[in-house]
Each structure stands twice: as structure tokens, then as C-alpha cells.
Amino acid sequence: MLMAWAGSAQSRDTERADKLFARYEYVDAAQEYLSLVDKGKGDGYVYRQLAESYYNVFNTTEAARWYAKAIETSAQESEVYFRYAQMLKAQGKYEESNRQMQKFAQMAPSDQRAKTFLQNPNYVPKLLSREKLYDVKTMETSSERSEFGPFLHQNTLYFTSARNEARKTYGWNEEPFLDVYSAVRNTDGTFAKAEPVAALNSQYHDGPLSITADGQTVYFTSDSFRENKFVRDREKDLKLGRNNLYRATRSGDSWTNIERLSISSRDYSSANPSVTRDGKMLYFSSDMPGSLGGVDIWRVAVNPDGTLGTPENLGPRVNTEGNESFPYIDNDNQTLYFASSGRPGLGGLDVFKIDLSQSGEAQNLGKPVNTEKDDFSFTFSQEHSVGFFASNRSGNDDLFSATPVCALELITRVSDAKTGAVLAGAKVSVLDDRNNVIATETANAKGEVTYTVECNKAHTLEASMSGYESGTFPVKAEPKGGKRTIEAALNPIDKIITPTQVVLNPIYFEFDKHNITREGAFELDKLIEAMKAKPEMVIMVKAHTDSRGSDAYNMNLSDRRARATVQYVISKGIDKKRISGKGYGESELKVACGENCSEEQHAQNRRSEFLIVAGS
Image (cartoon, rainbow, N blue to C red):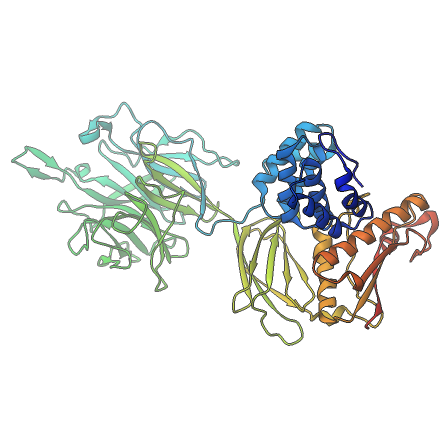
């Protein structure tokens, strides 16, 4: 029992409640303390004792409520803050739990629990948002000038930049002409200093580009002025160039045989190429005749001899009356990423993706890839499992990396282990790798609950249903994400009822403690279901310890644990006449191994038994 703490005191009013509490009769003690509150006699001591009563039987909601009231009313010792934090955590209120743990750590800095917490004070277990697909960060390759069109080929990042201050400026933004740059990717994922790709750059605009998987052919955008092709606007005395598509082949470490593609024209623009890995199909953006909007996405077959087929507009599944540009075809030759201003989005250009082999709609990649600004030129490297894109969210076109959120979709299907029938209405909790409950939901009509969790972390699923034995189902860490279906087959509750006892897994208590833990409550709920199924059943709880410690100490500890177990069952609505408990310490060892017991033998001795004394 906890002694009275500073700032609160026992009184004649609390005498009856305190005696019940001292006898570990927490359910009745709580009722007595509540009656004092109803009479207007509540104070810091009463509120704390109420919280302690509920804490010992793992009533997390009421315990947290009264711990909060106790702290608000009077000064409390550090242990109150710790226990308050545990009750909040058990309800999934991790942010508030952390705040209380911070207070506990300030009051008891030498406590090992405080030290452990401070090693990782911001830890909060979480489910992943199904909407967030990527983690985004600014790339160190960005400069104060515009960059866009990133494309990682093998271990080299290519992109387009206006960073060359020595270059002639142009037009509306007075930035230097665009050049193609490359930067080698380091082993830690960073990039070396970017250098211009001289063989591709001209005195006009150049880039972005795309390279075939074998590295032998590059397709890139360049200005039609490159070959002195332009349209003259005599009224404004201007020469108007167009974006054209070019191709070059590799020769050693350089590019040669630069040629303008036949689909290029001085009458319309074609730009932003993306070639399939096998080099047989080229995707690009263009405002050529036949476009649905201002700029559309097209594709054209590349014949074995290098000639091109007839351009094909990708149609309304991709294109709108607005602008669609910056296509990128993924390694599977099916997934197309593109930027659009004509589709519902967050604002400006947004990045979308679509599976061209299916009939579904294009999917907006959502935040944080997309913002209220322009977000575009998304590409993805399957080899390194990272994407790249450009955005002017900071006021300038900058490069960003997009690391896929490694998400594992866990579909839990709860069923009757005997009949196979689905159990709609079952409760399914998902726990993280520290055994914290992240969330609890109710199974739908198909008996299913779906959670999206982090990859590379082990999880546990707990399923329960009235009339059934609760089940625990471990989920191993998955390095690549995706979907996984867990068949949670629950046994009817009579499975754990024998002629002489109800057989449960070990009921775990914290070292030298007797309060019911979350793990213990999960297991004891099976006993409650068994007693509901057989209303005539009467249970005797026998709690045992191992042989370590003195006889008197072990007897006292086991008796407290037996009584706390009984109180938990009563708190769940079972008549107190149907359950009793007693501690037996080490007087009935299951394995008489003396001083040479192994940990396994100690565990066998450290047990609780639930004997059926009537109604079997």
C-alpha cells in the first residue's frame, strides 16, 4: 500500500474507505471515496486514492480522470505523475502521457524510469497516414537559381539548372539560360558537386533529359535556336524559338551524334522526354495539333532502326483542358508520373500518377510532394528507392528528394476457429514493437480491420470477441511494405475451460508490484468471458511465486497479487461471491529445484491458477 503523501491526509471521513483500500478491496474502496466526493468532501488525498484504486484494477479512464484531479488540487509526489502517464499511455494519449513523464523526470531525475524516458522523450507510437506517400526534403544540389527535371540514372543525378552566372540571361525572369548538370551520388545518399554536361549544352536552353537503361542513348530538350530554327514575329520584332527533342548516343564518357527528332517542329513545342527502360517507347509533352488542352502528354514508338512512329495522345485519362507535362514512365512501363494544372489539386501544378495498364483514375500524390505552389518533374529510381522532383514552394524552383513512406497495410480477418465464420464486431488492437497499443478498432461486416503501420518494425495484433478466447498474433518486420492479411482465428471460450480450472497464459506483474497491467488485463479478460459463459462457475485464484526471496516476502506479494486479480474481475461486473483469491508464496512449488533453478523453472513456479470450486 502507498502511504499518505505530502499535501493530503487521511481523516475520520476516509477511515472506512482507507480500510478497504488497505485490504486491497479496490472496487469497494473506490465506491467509498466516490461517496465522499458526492458529499463535497473530496480533496487531493481522496482524489489520489480514487485514482490509485482504479489504477490497481487497470481502469485507465477513471484512473487518469482522478489523477488529473489530484494533481490539480494539491501537491503530489513524483509517483503520481508516473502512474498518471501510464494510464494516459494505456488509452493511446501519448502526447499527454509524455508531458506527465516530463514532470516525473524533473521531480525524480535519478529514477531509472526517468532516465529511460529521457533517452527518447519524443517517442510516440503511430499509425501511418494512408494519404502520405513520401517523406520530402530539400536537396543540397539546389542553388539560388532555378533547378528542375531531376533524373537519376545508375549513380548519377542529371537535372536542369540556370545556375551558370556566366551565361547570357534571357526573357521574362532575367535568369541565365538553362544547362544540363550532373552530380554523382555518394554511398550515403548525398551528392557530389554538380558539373555541367558540356557535350549536351548549347548557348540556348537545354534539358531536361532521359537515358535508356543501358546508358547508350539520351533524349533531351533543347531550344530550336540550337539549329537556327525559329518563327519571326515581325510586328514585335522577335524571333520565337520552340522546345524541340533531341537524341544523342554515348561515346566513352561523352555524348555524340546529336540529332533533332523528327517529331520536333518550329510550329509547336515538344519537351520533357521520358524513355522506357528498353528504349522502345518515348513519352513527352507537347502542344502539337491534336492536344486536348494547352500542353498534353504524348508517346511515340521508337523503331529498332531509331526512326519514330506516329505520336499518340494519351487521351482524357491523362490529359485535360489544362496543361499536363513532365511525364516520367517508371521501370514497369506502366506507371506514369506527370504534372497537371487541369486536375483537382492543391494548387498550381500538382504531381499525379496513373497505371496505364489499368482502368483507374490518376492519383494525386498529395502532401508533402504537392503544395499550393507548382510541384512538377517527378521521377523515381527503383534501384535506390527514392524519387526526385522540383517545386517553387520556397519562391524558386528547387530540387527535392521524395523517400517513399515504407508502409505495411495489415488486414486482420477475425473468425471463429471452429466454424470459420467471420466475427463482425470483434475488437482488434495493433501494438508497436514496444508493446504500446497504437489503436483499437471494431471489425466490419467481413470481420476485418485494416491498419497501416511502419515497415521494418515488428507489430502485434490483439483480437477479442465476447464468447471467445482473446488471441495475440505477432507480425514480423517487413522491409518492403505492401499488404499482409492476418487470419485471426479465435477459439470459443469453452476451449480454456477444463473440469477443474480455467487455463490462462501467465498473468504478468511488474517487479515487486501487484497492480494489474495491460498485459495482465488482456489475459484476465478471458477468465471473465469464461465466467459469463458459465454463470454458475465459482473461481478460486491461487497466486504463487518462485523460490527467490524470503518466505514471508513471497507470501505477502503473492497474496496482494491474488487480491488484485480478484478485484479486477469484480470491477468488470462479476459478482464478488463468485471469485476469491489467496497467495501461496513459494509453499507449492511446481518444480522443486532448490537453489539450482533455471529461469524457465522459476517461471513455471511463478504462476497463477484459476481453480473451479463450484459450477464445473
